[in-house]
Length: 346
Image 1 (spheres, rainbow, N blue to C red):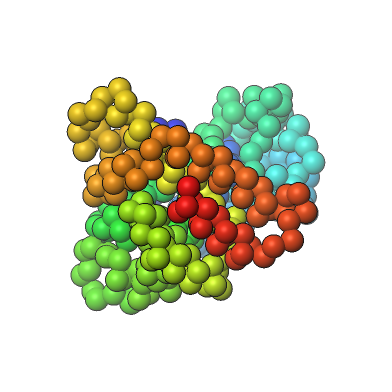
Image 2: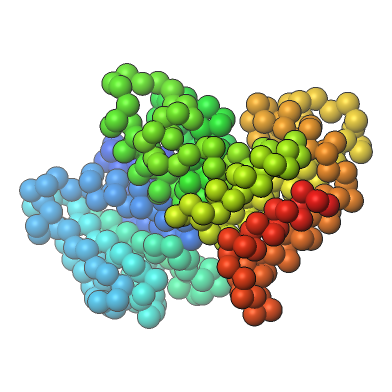
């Protein structure tokens, strides 16, 4: 996982831990294109800043579309009533026209107020004077989206933090289903655990298939595997069945295919410089569990460097066509089957 994202997870964990311990910053700026961690941090503050009986008089929740910065700042300047603190939360803050009055408040924030600014799926422009003023006093959680090639390791860490194991195949299948939507993974995991026997400590691919409704047999995960071994007949069969599933979309499939061949290219580069690279070195470079390295060892033999480069170029062309480029009129299913056929024939 990228270090920047490990930092986001750690900061979120600290905010949650402090909230449970009754420790709060005067201002929080929770933002980012990936809303998973900002949502968790905001919920922890809402749950712990005030006792239930204190909330009627000391908690105010605003929404950016329905308020303005002056109103939020004025509320934040009020003193608590029969409580240690006030809690003022501004949700959907990206809808606010200006943050100037909030920035002015942040120059001298109230010691008895906790102000939370939540920008869901968006970020404050860090070039703004208002941001620079707010960030001097605020705890800033900036949650950036993960790349698809970082998801397997994130899923395994997420499960480990919950005291669970998950097999590499199960993590890969869950990644295929949810993409980079961390919230979706969390929701589906919670649903699945309710259906598993009490005391379950590890999740396998069968658990994912039975409880989340995705079948490995006709998945992009299985397709890339047989493409790696150049099993043409099986690859075309899987591609045909996969492209006919209700959830099929080229926009979701293309990043997975591109990431697969990009990893093959990376392994080619590594082996050119270090033909005796260990399995662990390969796994580290590719960002995969060592369990999957044997698949890529086979793929570099099946797809020499020039073929691999040609396929990556082809993927870019079909990604463009799949998005309607050049006025493409073929169906997404037909384009996908044409692409897979060309990859196998190259």
